Image (cartoon, rainbow, N blue to C red; front, side):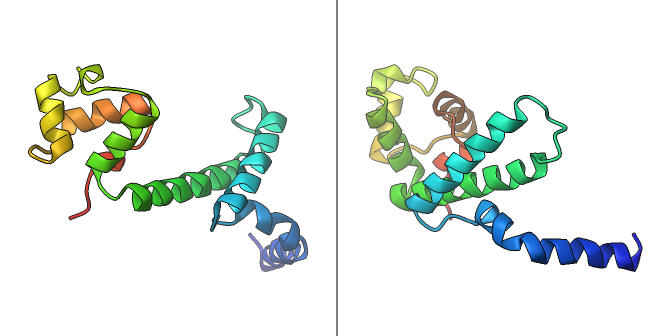
Length: 141
């Protein structure tokens, strides 16, 4: 790309930044998150199923920022993988017996009480079941 063309791109970015910036922010609170989600929904309505639409990179940035905020928020709120599991069980009205993919009710009880840790197979099953990232259930060392 020629230097003149690069400068033109930068000039346009500067000129229109005040219009673009609200779309690429990293949300710092739930209010900003809500606004970003609403804007993303509007863009998704415009794009529809056209994966090649010129606005897709912006949609990817917005989606990543939303996911990052939510991941950090829930990780801070829940603290540990077991706490995340307890929270999700409560939110979905589940008992220990409702998680056969993890193991018997006794195994689930041991995990919830901290006597046993989740293994990779269990983590992957939970992530699929609750539609969350596997690291939701992995504790930081």
